[in-house]
Length: 215
Image (cartoon, rainbow, N blue to C red; front, side, top):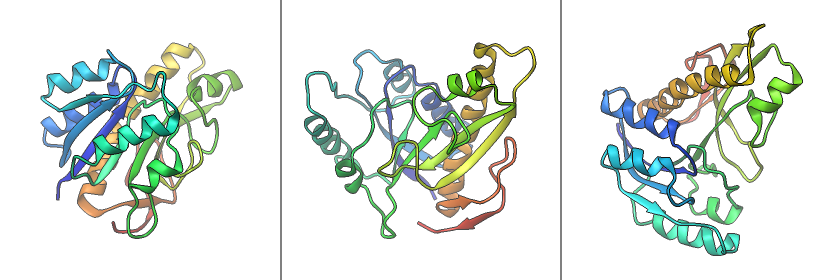
């Protein structure tokens, strides 16, 4: 079956483009009903326009968190959505917003991708902190969102080795390439069989053993 999603972004939208390209290529059974950004002029808007996707710009500047989230909630509720997908959305979602998008089992229908093997290196500098720490293996995590930052049930992880000659830029570029592969794959797995919680993880493998929980 196909899933209806809204994508929230703040920046250039490279993960958004990976999702839309996967849909265009028939690799992802999904419809992006809306791309919502909080930064006017964000690159994600140009990508959405390129693929003919509806957009909404709701700047948070000058608003309280509650005021901004009420506008976001109202916009999202105009669409029949199965999931909200975060793609570089640089806002922490409150429990109030999340509570508006909860499934029958109590999980929030919000998915995020994070540039580390959580629970290591949460926060906005995942790649940078991993690189500065000197990790030999880094990675990417796709997870359901909960009330804690970069937390919640893990859906998939993919690892990559740090190379001896890596710079921060080459390190991040390899991670971003994996992000662009794993995010559409996880969404397709959800479209085909519902949400699955992964127990073991292998490099670039989103078909590891898992305990399946249907939507």
